[in-house]
Structures are given as structure tokens and as C-alpha cells.
Image (cartoon, rainbow, N blue to C red; front, side):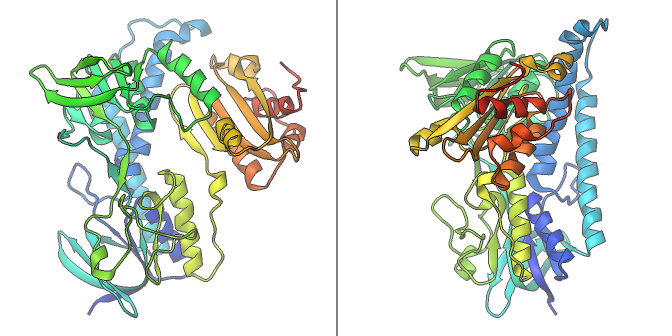
Length: 476
């Protein structure tokens, strides 16, 4: 006899496992289906983010940043260091230990909250009063029934046509997190978040990095002033070679590595020769094999599950969250959607404010923003005022020897309500939280300007930027 649940979640990445936990907290009998296996062949929770994405990449970023600090920054603190080296195997093992700890932690949370973990590939079989799902795993195939289904199948790396990825020489994000040696010449296709973060890791560890970007503008999704500052820093002292407007053609494996033929922005033929290549041209939703055709679930031409503002799909009591639906492919966006859907299923009024979702790039310096950019506000004809303050005038930033970048606040010219906040600098990923709270609660720049910020702290730059909206910054 098939087991029956109030809620079945397909996928245990951040969106899925959070949805499952919240549903269980609300008293719903909940199952979560996950097919991911770790390199040891064991089933693991956490999806791409915890296993081969957000968490391991941040671990390697931290390790490579520490290596660079030891080489170049400690001398200014009066710390004498000589013969600095690194053990790549130990770096990778540390990364893997963190991943194992995090994924095991989710398994513990499932047990604590009485979420049933079903190991294997889940898909729709049929519908009716309840939805029938099939889970195919190592122990065989099980059929279950669920009144409500949450699709949280995530996304996968988008690959170039006719360019096979072996995750050894030609890699996506998964292979790029597990190089067994530092390539002398590393090529990267795509100057987005993944390309810049992973390119930075291996550049700091000794690779000569060349990034090819098809778009004519650098970081077009970010505020133009932040993008301009990032370009100056990344292509200057950070040593990344980035070519914009590059149209990639044939990618050929050679005896020494990889050869990438491309056309430059001015139409000239060029070739990039490298030892290893990272392909980071975006991600695609995982909807293949979901069994959508068995139940008439609507999926758009790009592969996303069609949903409304509350993540309801085209079928009754079926929802979809995270990377598999419209909107930014951000783990925290998926988590919030998972909580919203679980609460709606339980009869509550869950919601997500899509105007208050932060974006973060964990480069050095970090980049983070929330709300509108200046170019968006101009395009929409919105009158605004801008206040900007540099970390170079902040005592804590100087003490940390991390005084690059700035924070900028954009506020409505008439009401002073904050419309967007943009940061490039050390700890931007942490500092942006104040701006998210401000936008969520409809704060004005004056509100932040009047709030007491600890001194000395990096957060004072946020306050000074708010003061600068009214042209009355106190320390610059």
C-alpha cells in the first residue's frame, strides 16, 4: 500500500529542504525526495548549492584569499612571513569536510522535524484527489500519494552546444571546484558570478586567467557605478584578464589542453589556448524527467515551471519554488519561496517581497545590492537622489587593510524612500542586510542616517551614504 503524505517535496536543495522543514513544523506529514549522490556514492541532501555550489565555492574563496593575504598583506601589519606555500589537497579536503558537515546537518534537521527522506528520483505518475508520485532509487521503486506537491528540482549548469564537459579539462562549476592541480593557464567562458568567483580562486592560487564574455558590458545586471569600480579592480590589481563582446566558436581539445576560437568585439578572429576551461554561461532549470507530461503540468519554452506570484503551478495543490521557476536563481530567494508555499498550504498567508531580495557576488572585494539600479530608475523615469560614501574614509576598513569600494544609496527624490542600495567592498554580503531590512519596512535614507551605528565599524559607511543622499555626510 502506498504511503500517503500531506506534502511531498521533490528536491532537497535550499528551496526544497526549507519547504519540507517548514511544512513539517506546521504539522503537515511531509516527505522530501532527493536523488543527489556525493562522490562516495552516498545519497546526500542540499542539492547543488551545498554540494557543488554556494558552500564549497565560498570555502575555496576563503582559502585562496587567506593565501593571498599571507603573500601580500601581512607585511603591512608588521607580520613577517616567508616561504608561503599551500597544500591544494588540504584546501579541497577542508572544502569537502564543510560540505559533509552541512549536508549531514540537514539530515539531522529532517530527523528533528520528522520529515521523511525518500532517496531516489521523483516524478509525477498521475493525479486526482491526491497526486501519485514515483520514487526510483537503489532500493527499488516506491509509489506514494500526496495531497500537495512542491517542485524544487533546482537547476544545472548550461553547457555550450557540441562542447562536451568532462569536468576534468573542460569543466562547469562542479569540476572547477575539484581541480587536482593549479592550471598554469585557465580559460573561463562567462564573466558572471560563477566565472568571476572561480576565476578569482584559481588566479590567487597561481593561474593566469582569461575570461571571455559575450556581452558588451561588464556586470550589466549590477549598478553601473559598481560595475565600473569592479572592472577597475578586477582587471587591475586583481590580475584578471577579461575580454568583452567575445563570440565563442569552436572549442577543441588539444594535446596540451583546450583551444577556444572566438571573434573579438571588433570582429577579428582570435584563439585562447589554455590548460583547463571553465564554462559558466548560466544555468538551466531541472524539469526533464519530472513526469510533467503525465499530469499536464505547464512548463514554458525555457524549461521553467509556470507559476503565479505565490508559486502556484498550473495544477491544483501543486507548487514550484527556487531555480525551477521565474526570477533570480538565488538560494535565499528559493528558501523564502519554500517557506511561503509551506505556509500557504497550511492555511497561512505566506509571501515573498521580490523587491527586497539581495544579490551577492563573493569576489574580493565583495559586491552586493538590493532594489533598483540607477540605470533602472532612469529607464523608468523615476526621480531620485543618490548618496555615496567610500570605504577609504572608514577607520575600521583601513584597520582591516580592506578600504576598496563604496556604498551607494538611491532614494526617491520626493519621499526619500530607499529604492536601491549598492555596495562593493569588504563584507558587502553582510552589510547589505541592513539595506534589505530598510527596503522591507519602507525606510527612508533619513531613517538610516538617524540610526546610531557602532564606531568604529564597516556599517558606518552605510550611514554616511545615507547622509550623503542629503549632501551632509560627516566624515567625507
